Length: 260
Image (cartoon, rainbow, N blue to C red; front, side, top):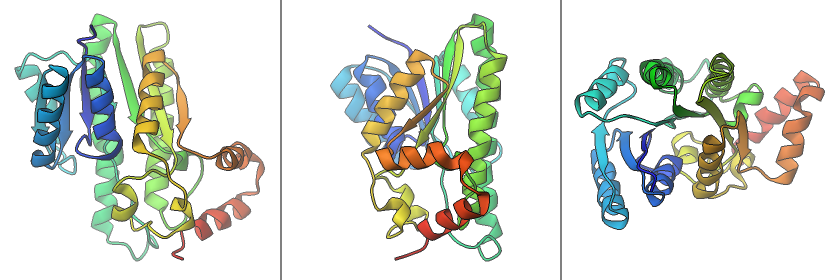
């Protein structure tokens, strides 16, 4: 039985919750992190009862600069060895960059980039010391292009993919792998929170379970980049991205994020 421990951020809903369920179904213990402690406790009760595993709840707001260190210290104090680090927390926001609240975009950078980087930096030395562990950073297909009307979100995900790939190479020759998961549009709270409901970008969505399952399995296999939750036509478009003139691509993405 797999008793490995997975630490998952953004575990209260969407793909984060599905990652937790998938890992628990394999007999693994969990450290689940999000702001909403009530949602985390509901998930804890569900998984411990169903799978007879251990789930530690840590309610933290990753908007706060000190949160990653507090998480790491709490995990160490509890004597928990994290085997899989799944940096799933993140959010977006639609609108013209010059009109959006600056605080919202700075918080997006804090969660999508700074917290993810900090948690990776805190836990990775432990992985290296014992020469084992897996990291999955949830990026986005948005990381492969620029995103007018979601300028900061797309840029933040470009960072996640680039960062993940770079440290994956640094760890080449070890038993540690780093996987970037690049989902398309999903049936989660993300679209509503990012004001993307009723845009062409989210006209077709997939179940977060489908994305989480492919991501989790790919992490176990040590894959580098994994695209999931996109249609055949979207996959073709993604493949053609480097060949399409930049201004044409920018206009297309801009139009896809307009309200109907």
